Image (cartoon, rainbow, N blue to C red; front, side, top):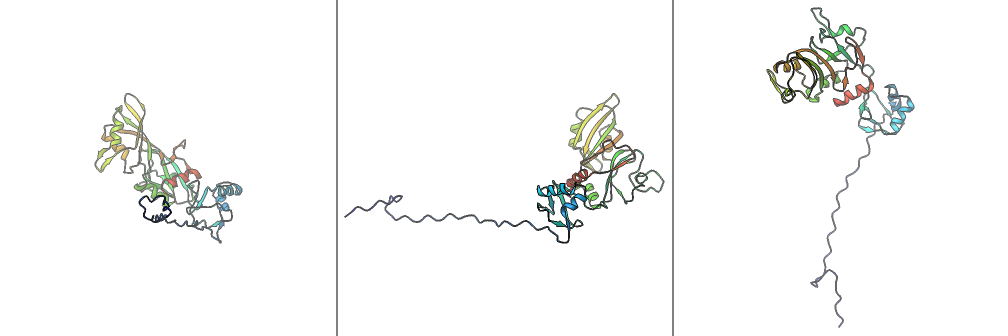
Length: 279
């Protein structure tokens, strides 16, 4: 009788059972990109060129390079048409304002001017400085009469609402001149919070710009939009404000804009501002 052949992997002589097949993970179906083409629309490169993004050919290169999104979808084909009145177009992640009737201005409000469009007592208001504009503009937020600096004016209601909404925490930067020489620990005090009559207020940033024997100049960054909040904070810590200039709102800087003058925000400025509030 011939010996029983040895079965590899079965030292006990029992027949080996088949190893169960490994379960493969289910493949998730890849959804094709959403079609944003509107046959009755306008060619995308023409819309971009009309919005000031460059020549028609330069805008075609933007599309070919995958830098343009329509309603969240990257568009690379030059034949795509969209309806500008309803589309959201981003280039390099920044929203392109397609509605040419909407405008946003930077205004350097002088001291003594009210942040309102009309005053029954005849005092100077913002409207005195934009009488040459045909749009019906309104101010985004306020600066009290004794303060000066950057104030945004717009007829874009959605942008204005978002800039003022606490949800987006749009920071504002102020150059503040206060009475007295500030102490070294004031930054810690202001950043941890000062108790005011309507709740705790704190700054996001603080630095000393200059000091003399009788006064100090400091820069603060704060997103709290309560009335006269910067003045009340410094008053509470024993340094009354003698001068206050707002130098920045979000990504928009006052720069060298002269008091009492305005300028229209550039495309990139407006795009970065809109991106900051999720537009």
